[in-house]
Length: 112
Picture 1 (tube, rainbow, N blue to C red):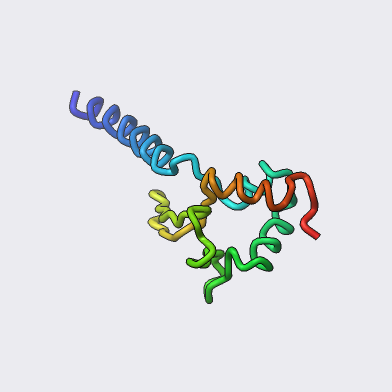
Picture 2 (cartoon, helix red, strand yellow):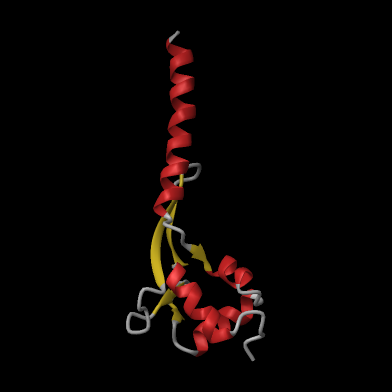
């Protein structure tokens, strides 16, 4: 009986963690998915953001937003992998940022 309860609790615990992470993302998308939504190749979108000083690469090659250009366009989120205990950070684009970049790039336009 205790084993059955433990198994069910583990299943629900993992499900709750998944939905907590999903809700905590708050409609944010990563740079790759944002580029797809804007119908721009990922590398060109990131190059556009780098050239226009919206983001920069730190010494670990992570893409991070500049504070002075981040007017609610980006959020930094921490992530944790439960299976191998890896942790890190990721730059996410807010709905306001997606709208801003859609206007700037015209969407479906190669940022040349």
